[in-house]
Length: 190
View (cartoon, rainbow, N blue to C red):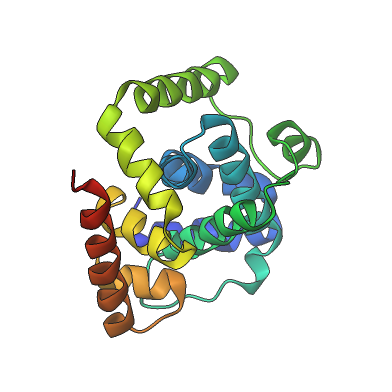
């Protein structure tokens, strides 16, 4: 789906929430993966992804087309949700099932596929010692460094996309990445 088609889907979804399904299908895995990288927990990542799409659909009327892709808006919502999780540690968003019941999200192709994706993501994270070490070090950094490092190196976002997602200038993002990488290097030294 190109940007023009995506904008048409968004316009339809503003009137009919069921029309949001192609957007959900296109971006769910990426948003889940981002949340997984931020939290290191598949269950929490699933909650953050569900809450992201629930909020996106409910606030779709506020979305304005910009030079940045629609996914930047979704990442901004997911970033806010992940930050909320870390600030509160009492994160209790609406469950995926509740979002579906309220008419907010389309049902994925298969419920078993989503559960399998959660289990595989959690198993992969648990198996990878370097990931666990990096996750531990990243989790000790201030939230702003966590956001930029995950978006840049794990989500492979460009500086301009990160600036759009976080609402900061590109120079600030470059500086945060540089400082964050330096802090990580210090943590990996024996």
